[in-house]
Length: 399
Image: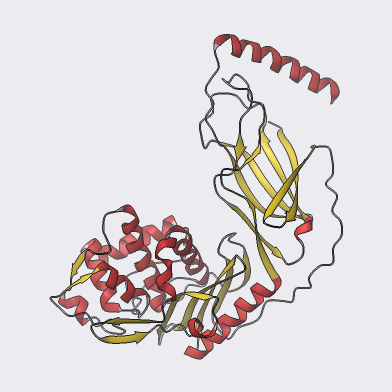
């Protein structure tokens, strides 16, 4: 089935992306512009790293991004994500109280210093997990949500599969060393992207510099929260096996980046290497919002329906990351399924949106029906059959 193709030219105006429709036989003229010279991505003193745009998902720099490594306390990003997931579902509330077991209290490593036999609010435990990396808080939440760390780890791995974290396996909720407990820079970036985008109402806690519980005040170990005002998360990690790790996110001028650095040799090194990645990304790239979710991009003919046209667009905001000062080279093509026929349901895929930077395809998204269209009456369907026949006949005649 031949695709019906329409080309859109993207022109950036203040606060508005203006789209101009061009016929399928026309060629969108691209006026040459001075291009930003982009150097190679920095090389870091780390085992593995990646730099991702949080909105578009584009990878801007990477080194061994799929190498399976011990994630240390980066594990707690998934622990916190599961808590946020259950809060969103309504199965738990921030003010719910959690019984603290002896096992949770005895867990070694970093702590928020909860006491055995006490009850602690989920709000406090979540802050303890994210801000001060409390192993005791992580175990307490695992027991509360799943009855123990083993079944909770199973939940963690189910969510990892759902989020396309293909090289991750968890055996505990803390990141303490464990056989067959591993993840990758890419998977941690994907998880962080979901934390930021799926549950934005909880994200502010990742930027907190200190947390006090039971008269004990502890600092967030992410040094960049003090050094760079654009950095607002996410999590540090360390074990002798994993080295020093840091997942960070920063936002400047409506562009949000996520960096993951694993296996550096010091607390200071993970901060410095992360800063190199973030500086590179913000200096040489920009992210543009091209389309709003639900915006009507085209209205093709639909045959045999109660109406003659179908409103078509995208079911999520469309962001694209590109080298700075090259937005004039952006073009988009709508590849619609030909011969659209009723009935069509809201959300049905009816084609693809293809975005190009010059000759390079930099993104594709599904085009969906923004409304449902029922079949028309008998007379309308018969009339459309006649019109469709002569439309096809004329099309073959002029080809």
